[in-house]
Image (tube, rainbow, N blue to C red; front, side):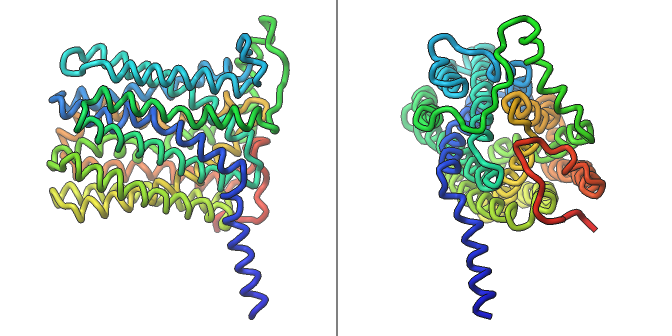
Length: 443
């Protein structure tokens, strides 16, 4: 009995220890900088536009700025293969981290200076520029994280990255709201630009990732062309690659569609900025961290396939809580419950799904392949949100809209179940991951 207790305690400690390793802490710092540009053109910009009296269709159309993130696959090969003059001595990943970080700071400051009420066109352009800079920053951050983490650290490293992402996103969002209430939106946005610094410092202090593999120097036309198509050719030659890509495209449609409209619901239910800051940002922040912690341990203890399947169910069901909030009306308890459940589910799901996507990468083409995967993961949901979400809400009402987003999660669940049963999940794995130590396919 005593031996069993000691073995169980050792097993639990083994699951937690990787959170405190150097690579995982680096992933946390990278996540902080990765999360804040998203907030600047996401919930924070939605609140800013709504308070400036911009109509719902225009506000939801701004989510199309996120589509820039989905286009990053087309220039990710540059970050994989093009050496920067002078800075290349610092290393490929480090040099690009510094350049992209400076670009993000400049783009956020530019968005700070526009006035949506006076010039909506300039605001659109500024948001798109933040999207381009943020997407480029994401490319190098994701590549640096995957190449820094060892295979056994993918679960906990993804968890730490999500911790950082949430702190960066929530911290920037909260700072922007507080600063905007006192000094205006321009001051709020400019203060948030400093969130780009942690990733830049991490890259300088840790240096070039040890696991990074250089295939060939991209000098001639043939080599450049190879650097563009090589990552995609390698991915699609794997058994089941097209089904994996289909899963990536559809698995998060409902979750993305719902998440990008929450602030509209809060505004229509007459929640104040302080209530949004307390519940959506404050409570949501801690609930997300709990979900991330659970996700990191679950990935280690349950294995990839079971932990991902549970995540898909939780992310789909969590949208029901917002249907209930919409039906209940302005209720602080209702908002707390919906935000708490949704963020625990998102935190858990973010860890295990990102760990799976990271394991799909070939270490020779990390930046390009993860750009393809991460872009595909949300492109459909963002496109649908930007083109139809506002009209759907006006036509169906919030309750039916969130019920629809729950149903939209079912195709991804069914596809992953089938991929697991047939072994395609393992067969399509890249060199960044490794085979699971135990069999955990579904009966």
